[in-house]
Length: 194
Length: 213
Image 1 (cartoon, rainbow over the protein chains, first blue to last red):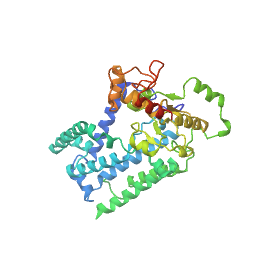
Image 2: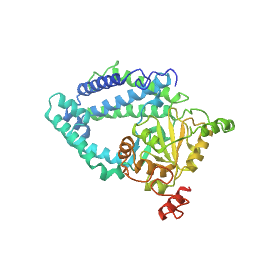
Image 3: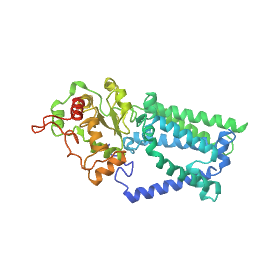
Image 4: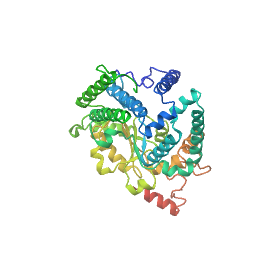
């Protein structure tokens, strides 16, 4: 693609050090936003499951919609080459099972990986405990990988995106996600006001 | 997002309207990126046979099993590995990250910008035929795996006398490098019939039969 300046690392505008520095800056900004949204508190996150405080849904959906609209329009304007943006690959069944385990852990601990780091950084002991559990889980999974590899690599779908699933043009899917998010925000406000 | 006064100039409402406008604009835009923007519209009438023949001649049409393994390991952006074998064969074993694409449904495939397709079959013939069809349909970056899944198994999953680099690559995919096997080449560790040894082993016969595609 001619003229596209992003992805920055891919377009040769950032070296290896520059990419690392950018990743650090984005990570710090992400942590700061999580903390400012109050997501460093387990009570806030657990409120999501009891439908009393839907900050998680609102923060995450806002981030998704912002990133999606930004990526779509920057690609259209020729600034970003979406074809060169890395899309993680899909392994349907193992990722569904992983998602279920992740969700159970999230409900149990009241923190997810990002928010546990934020909680630990602000001195919360429960945050530090979840971070320790996180690393223990990563190590245990790595050690158990040889025995579960067949399942781990089953139902591969390659880069499997929403437009692939619903077989609609990318722009239409963008609009659908925006409408879905705005609807979710409206429902969330109603639930919180009860 | 949680705080803020409700009022006429609620910034959340302005943001919601902005998102909606951008979303509607996205839906109205043509061509849309990735999925529905063909890199080049399929034009079967304009196949450049000489250009395709030149590509085949200079071996720019295929990748080796080791090259494909490198691509998968380095998570090459836009890489899609497509298995054109039967469902049973795919279920039995497939290249990690590969998705199954029945040959019959190849006509439904649409080119996407930035995507690199690698096709493979049992021995390579079906994938090579699919390569010609896709190139004719306007796909730019498409390759087939030379030697198919057989070469993948031999060269990546159980390479004979590999160097350190290939050993590491093999182990990345859960392979088991073999030391002291026969030299690389057709048949790998299984000796093929020669003038001096006209009776090949049963395993060699089976392998050659399978390799016949």
